[in-house]
Amino acid sequence: MTNLARLTAPAASAPGSASSTARAEAPRSTPITEKELADQLATNITADRYQRFFAGQARLRVVDGHILEVVVPSRQVAELLDRRFAGNLRAVADSVIGRNALVRFVVIAPPINAAVDAASAAAANRNTRATEIAGAPVSNTTTPAAAVSARAAAPRTAETASRTPRQLLLKNFIVGHSNRLAYNAALQTAETSMATHLGPLFLHGSCGMGKTHLVQGIAARYRELNPNARVKCTTGEAFTNEFVAAIKTNKVEAFRAVYRRVDLLCIDDVHFVASKEATQAELLHTFDAIGLSGARIVLASDEHPREIERVSKSLISRFLSGLVARIDPPDMKLREELARAFALRRGLMLDDSAARLIAERSGVSAVPGVGGSVRELEGLLTQVEAAHRLLPNLSTGGTVGLATVRTALGINDGDGRTVRAKRPVPMEAILHVVCRELRVDPGEFAGTGRHKRVVLARAVTVQLARELTTLSYPEIARAMRRPNHSTVITAHQRLTGQLEQSPDMDISTVCGPEFAGETLRGLCERLKGECVRVGG
Image (cartoon, rainbow, N blue to C red):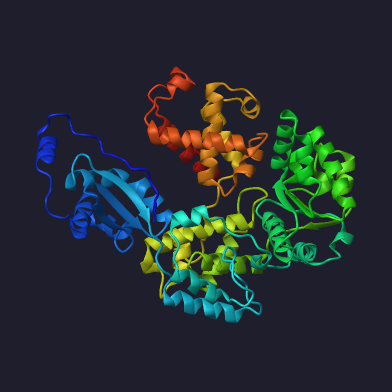
């Protein structure tokens, strides 16, 4: 069980008013039933909207005498209901419980029903190899159906899922034509005693193709086979930060003792060391030191070694001294298989037509360089899961069909000919709209200036990118030309906090008198609508 939204109190009645006094002096003595709460909400939002969004999906209950809990099956449903009906729910709480009532969302994941297990078994029979579901660590003999059944026996709450990172294991990696070479190289590096003859393994490909999965999978598999081995799995950014900190604190020798005595060194996003000459020199010496001891090295980057700018020739030479394996975007067949596997991980079963449509949509993104990525496919499945939970009448027997996918992805084929899907908004469109509407020069936006309006523009850009694209924080940072993604995360967290605490703040105090009367929340909503119009 997890509280998804912060506790919120409704606006208090005027002090001394008759209604507030009556509630305070005459507390309710009989329990408030779920039906009474449901009837109140249906009256507040209309019966039709209640049936569409709440009936069969959300339960209302009173806890501790003053908290209205909205129990939902998934985080996506909670976010949608909170966004659309927060005011209505507060009004119901105020009416039924009293002026001190609070509202909170609680996610309780439902057990996966037997229909899903049966469908999972059918899917396993169709595959010549038993594809293990990514994120569900199981034994080599466990089938997808058994993995789903195990999760059904011990359903996880959203809180558990968010705190337990998905295990990125080689046995969970789904292999297709586009990633087979990289996967086989990863397997050999982790398992074969002759792997040192290959030299460093360098994986490269666009964002969201599975590089991090392979890097962490190699480290996990090597640890499993060599329990006493010294393994270091890090990122280019973390290596740089640790090295800089070691210099500042006079602990360079301790830093080198960690990195130069390993049996396996894995560095993801190694391109981060670009333009950092001291870090590059240290990394080069580290490679030389551990290479002499026969240690294995695994590197990953968005770009081929020769395409990484501002990196020394000596370091590029080390990158190229072993096997360089590219991971290409998944083809249609692999995207279908990924869609089925990721859906099973969420407790859903896609029929063939639904899986095919999701695979097609994930390959036509308008975002440059992201089309067909695994991350985008997972984003589409999030929309499908939300529609499945909210509109169960579209699915039959626990199986997600074509109707649910069309509804979730905004596809309209009313005449049987026109099919149009909602696509992620291009990052370029978001940058253009934000700079234009806030009157910020693009050069200043990408620079190091800290003017209040520029800082707000950057924060709003991150907020919109998280809502309207499938990009990760590092990808957003690169698009915004920020040196690292930690500043992007900080900006997003700060703006999210401001939207929660002071949504009606007048932004003229930050942006100037020409924005007088516009609130922070109103600005974000206006820019969001404009981004969808321009880039949708």
